[in-house]
Length: 150
Image (tube, rainbow, N blue to C red; front, side, top):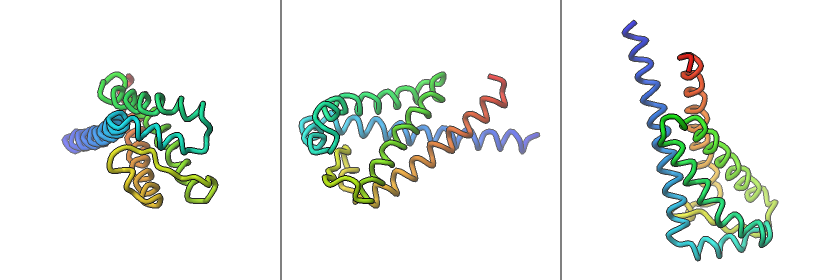
């Protein structure tokens, strides 16, 4: 019985550390974009999506990143927060893969903070690591939720 309790505590600790890493990621990236909003908008204007989409993304991206962070902070909304976070990471990872395969002719990085200094290959590695963390936390959270009858 004691081994099961230790295992559950270890699992809960791992889930919370993963969620904390995601909260830091989303609040940091959104904050970086908002702190240098003019530069963020300039970088987005260079994206290949067209002006209307780029304009919408300038508001939506930091907004959804903040939303993901907030959802992850609140105990009752951690699961939806993990889903939002996973969707963001999937979208960013697909974009980086398209850049690396040469699909886009223009490849500016509109990431915030230190992330914009990463090479595209390092972006991909970073995204895959965070996406893996996110998906594992999502899986463990859903297992825990299903097992507890919540």
